[in-house]
Length: 251
Image 1 (cartoon, rainbow, N blue to C red):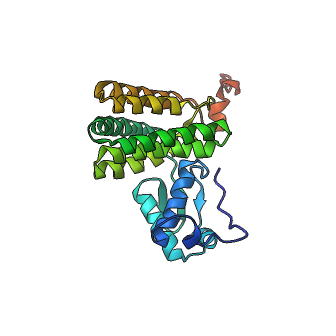
Image 2 (image 1 turned 135 degrees about the horizontal axis):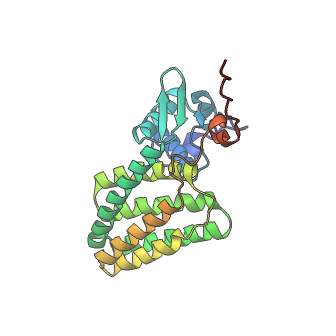
Image 3 (image 1 turned 60 degrees about the vertical axis):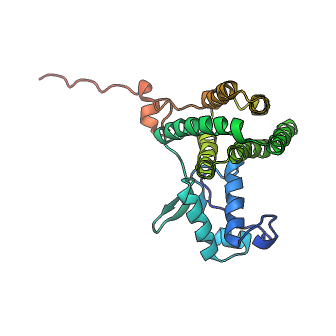
């Protein structure tokens, strides 16, 4: 879970990585995608040296990409100790999900008003790709596409600040799921996503919002956010087995 990244045998040159934009953008996009796919676990050390070798870029570029991710609260920059993938606390997880619900409600309402036929068609294609990914056992790609669906929906809402906020919330949600998801790892988000598109296309804002809130409930139900459920303190875990000290005999 917390192992430092190791360099690949052959560096992936940023300008050949299949991403558009500056080298900063490309490195940022690859790390962001790895977080969405839950290939980077919470607490993973992000060595500037290792990432520089992997992407074939300078440490300055790596620092800029990590700084952007830190601004979105998915990377933690620790003075003199380097960067790590964020590990949201239970309270932070609850706050993220509360914020996510508020944002998803607003995005859904706006999407009903502003989404074009072309955007809805792109969303449907994304859902089909998500379903196919899970069907062939590529869980990482399926999870990433599920997150990207919500980002694409935010774009269809036509509100730039919400897109930016949603990008941070979606990536934080992916970390929370990786950290707190319970044993049930089944996914049927693609069915819920398709129903949501149908409601948006029909112009039924009330139904669309109801479906989105149900979708968020479904995600929330898979998480174990009971602060008392687990501990890394062995004495606390096995306290019921420890013998109580005998009372001192009176003289």
